[in-house]
Length: 475
Image (cartoon, rainbow, N blue to C red):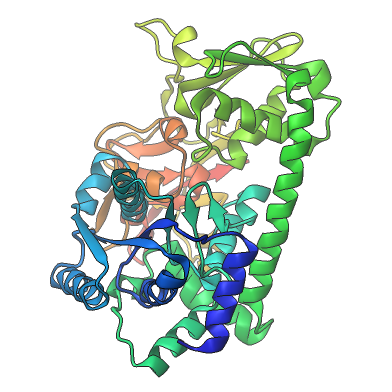
């Protein structure tokens, strides 16, 4: 192994106390360059640190024969080094569908379930994964683009609970060059070349553009910034600990409700207000994963709203504004068996009329409709997010403004390729509790327009044959 990169990894592990003598470590081994390099590093230091190692490979049931070859490669690699190897199989596309996740999310969830299962069975201490510096840069950019808060901009931690990432200090190109010099083979996942996933688009286009046109050290600079943001996060956690008991009232370790004193809350800087709200949700549910900046922003606005105003949050939690406090409790406290907390809304539209609607971020908008004869339109006008044009002749039913229903779909392209509305909302990262409240313009079950996402069905696109148009505008 290249001495420079070996010392870089060793120094990073020592600085962050990632690997200690006599550790038992479960290691993710996909067969790709990154995990193979981690495999070689850990087997090289195994005797020095007296490590107990178990390598785990997960077949996602996606790439057919290619996935089978990867599994065989991993098994042979472990056999050659005389280390334990365990393999798992799961139909990830099916799992993703059943759990309303993307395949990428479902694969990640299942992998870590497998890692933890083996760790518990063997009584080992840690789980090692092969994320490197480029992965860190991609994560930070992805979180930034999707509107994450400061925690998301901290990226992945070198050590997060029992999960360790020994390769975060090295770049992908250094890993690949080191393997090539050693003559070490590795597998190439064909899905890494597909641009369907947002991360792949960041990897293939955004980062190379930044490196070539703005800053060649983009990856390392983003990684350093992520490390600084993790320090900021640690500081904010300390400050939140200092005011938590003064601001909130929790009667149990996993309470059915938690209150925040508005008088005390308003004395705090908005950064601490946000963190208090985040921690209140986590205190009730034990999770942060599905909490977005959108939810926290809604809670900040709730502080100044009238008494009795409620908002829905993930994990069936409802936040209510009272005279002098914000109360979080579970939804069944507010709903009777015959009632739904979701507002019922469905209205047929009429040309020349305006409709006052509310988006999921709690903002109000006016949507107006009118018809006009077709005229020559530029591509810039067609792509206007605030006004949309539909071929009137293609509309089969009187369009309605309503919330999603079972069986709703859109055309993705003019060739008739369809996609379920539910999947579009999942792919657009709309939180599960908000999907039912996304307003749509519907022609039966055919969704013409999703105003909040500025997305239209390709079926209704105007073309040279269009004679009359329905125009929809958001004010």
